[in-house]
Length: 413
Ligand code: SF4
Image (cartoon, rainbow, N blue to C red):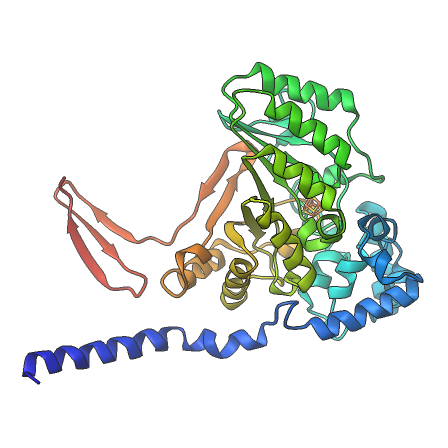
């Protein structure tokens, strides 16, 4: 072998050793960060226990209406499955008077009662920290960006319609907790009609996001009516639905094939969902996402960065890689909003930027969402990136790559 080739090959070998080493930490730790699929035996055990307690059957479990009717709304019932101290019970009762809670039996089955730091428990069981008054009820000032009841419009070509306050589970970090109220209420039809008329009258609107609460908790008839109305408007190019049911109530999709049959009639249609923890990726949530994907609906995930749930670079990498395996594209990571009653979930920007830095290069671009901060009072989604562009001049631009290596490229056409 000639000397130059031998040196080059030795260089390549070292190069591949370096690549392997750059993810060695994650390779070792990823087995310890379990998905719900990897922890399915424990979840199945909890499910059986819950079914016994509720006197329900396997058939009931698959019925989303049964899941909704049997949501856990009393601390005494939850205490059958989780260990609470006397003070914890009192705290949950105190928080419940201000912010209601309701947890589907399915989501309850994901909680690990042995783990006090369980990310599922943290998202669903009230914490005394919610009584901390830091923050605002409506930091995004949605109320001022409402040209018509139910509509929030912050951008020129798109808007959202909030169609219900109902959710499979009331997330403890919810940005719209002010709208959750004391009772489950769907929006009256005449208000929905007015919202549709607003879209019809504003020809620049090409993208409509139906959300809530949870858009999939409208009944099928109303979903069909709303989609057909919006589809009849020529300038509406795409329709998106925001739902956390694949995460908190997958039976809405797996147990009701009619819903998917309706959705697939109104393409191009997109679904944004909201997984925050690898533990939320279960056999049932996988089935729900696959049913939607098989119906030709692209799925995107909007994770919220939450202290004690996913503010860890390995957890986020595992979540994003696992989402791709169930055909969901990681779309956004939202910096938490300063919503009153959620301050125990807040993280600082350094943590978010470090997580983004840890993803780039170490996993495929498909597994890297955009990290977003929402500007206060409706200033809109603003991306946050680690800085890769070090210099931009008329002659050249200078960069660093994911490994911190410096390079320059001529800035000429
Ligand atoms: S599903 Fe969405 S709207 Fe409903 S409580 Fe959770 S975060 Fe809020």
